[in-house]
Image 1 (cartoon, rainbow, N blue to C red):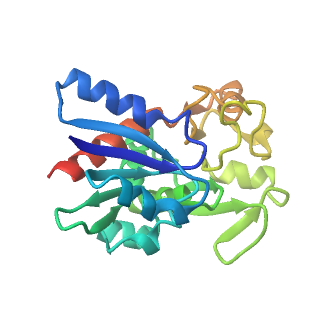
Image 2 (tube, rainbow, N blue to C red):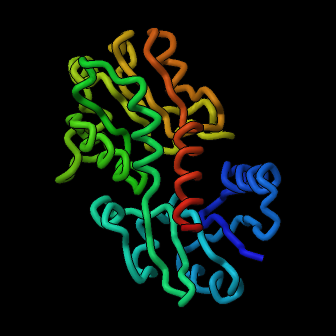
Length: 245
């Protein structure tokens, strides 16, 4: 039995386990299982490998997409450029190679909604997921700026410095923070939502709830709103191909 799974923290809500369970059933894949490995610290990762010698592949989610890097033997070229990993392939020799399929899932999910005026984007948050988003936007020739709680070399704006003009000039806004995730559905990033228009795209990596408070604010302004569900399907299918080629 080939085992696959998800590494993360507080991941009982996760999409991946149920997705692969349904996939295995629908496609009559009888020699595979998928399990959540919920760990409170990345230092527990080697123990998972030791206790599960038949693991062939893993997904990685918040908050370990960057912390996992020192435990890997090799990185795919794109994952190396991004600096974050959400997919691990374990070779027959037991070597661990890291990939990033988040960028692929996001790019494919966003691309179908782009119009010529979508030239600049704001990324809310600077965690591991945001790095894949920035890489995808760069590939789409979209200028990108990060928003965080404090200014840094990579952060152009803070939530308190962000103005209506900044929102107006960035017509793609992506929430890469966990704010608004179930059960904390009344939370959302604090930005000047009043400046959002029908020309904006609001993309939330959150998929539970289906419409986060962030997306609901965008919907009120007739903006295009996209949650993270389709992105997850794209990235999960890409991970499955990586594990099995």
